[in-house]
Length: 487
Ligand SMILES: Cc1cc2nc3c(=O)[nH]c(=O)nc-3n(C[C@H](O)[C@H](O)[C@H](O)COP(=O)(O)OP(=O)(O)OC[C@H]3O[C@@H](n4cnc5c(N)ncnc54)[C@H](O)[C@@H]3O)c2cc1C
Image 1 (cartoon, rainbow, N blue to C red):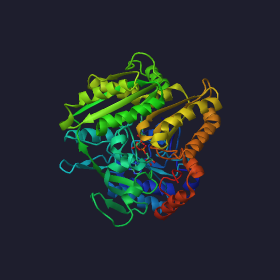
Image 2: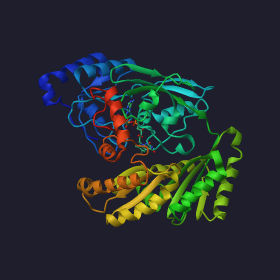
Image 3: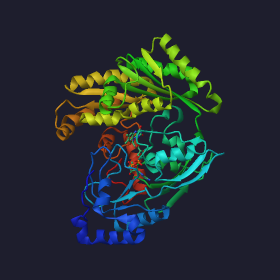
Image 4: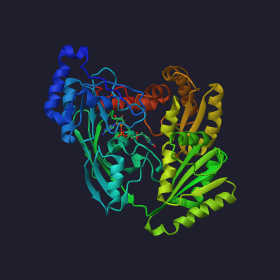
């Protein structure tokens, strides 16, 4: 983490604006809600991956929606750009300010109230700063669950998840964040509060503004609260780990599992041999679930509510037996207990940090149509290793969603920054070109941020880009909301 100081930029200081702004923001929010202390602000000026380093006029941590609205109006009056921030676990530098030092960071961490859990209606209303893991635990106590999870759940906030339209490992059954949001409250760039928290099953009063804000990465508004859909708590789960000989077989196993397990199938993740071994090197206490080497590993999660819990072990067993008989699985095991199930997920969730520990890599969060992803991996991985000698290309993650994290690891011994700027950049262009040719997306779930903004401009559909820019200009004519991100 950087501990850079946050001096007012020279140009602006001469106009007196930053000092006026800082004084007014401090008066508005008090010392608990606004600080320029470099030791407090510093850790929030870099992204989770450590790729982007910014500066800021100060860090605002408002206590409620009214304070955010007042602060946004103040920023408008002073022409101060705003960078919204939740848990800062995003993967695309979306929550990191630029290095001009002109912007203010608005972090929602103090807005962490769970306002209401409606057991009968299976809904929760909470503030934007609620951390995903806290949300899981709170609704679990009521016999419910929020059906979206991801590796960054200890940091990611509801506001961040909404603003990036996050995915994760349960999308196969429940869909992305967009599908979980029933209502939304947000402060818009003019300081007005859009209150659509009351969920309506039917509402045809024009554009769905709530959906417009979901995935807008802080460029159109600051999400302050949401009403989210809940599911009954699961009464049982079965977590299976299988070794298969190819990604094509993994794909066949997915179809098989969908056929045999139906709606009980909640997760289907793939981990190639290289990634599993990176994790085992990274986590000295972790153990491989299976003896022997396998080209690909598949993690499958089946779940049941109270009505189906007793039958779940048999369903898991039958799924594996039939997969063996069909020649799909070389070896497999079912977690014997909850601790082992967690250990399997720990391996899967550790792939990203383990690969990060191995050295520089270009990471691509891509999707193609689900039925083409196995072909894409088979085509692309050898292509990149051939075209960029010394690299290792791996694809892991959400095969069931047609979404793979396609990482190209640098040749051993290269200097990270120089490689990323040179060959690494060429690799990313090539990956994005290829994905676009295959009819896919250069950002399946992590968003665009500052990481992929130029690539979106280069490869995006011109008609779609025109609409994105027109909406941005209409809602944020001063261009103060998260400048340099997304559009
Ligand atoms: C180990 C690990 C695993 C991960 N796995 C996944 C995964 O499987 N799937 C996935 O989708 N993501 C994953 N992520 C990425 C990350 O957790 C998500 O993008 C998450 O949604 C970010 O939430 P956050 O609160 O940390 O947002 P931040 O990182 O703080 O911000 C992300 C973006 O949202 C904006 N923003 C934040 N809060 C608000 C708000 N209240 N209003 C308006 N804009 C706001 C920011 O300006 C920024 O553009 C992972 C991250 C880690 C560290």
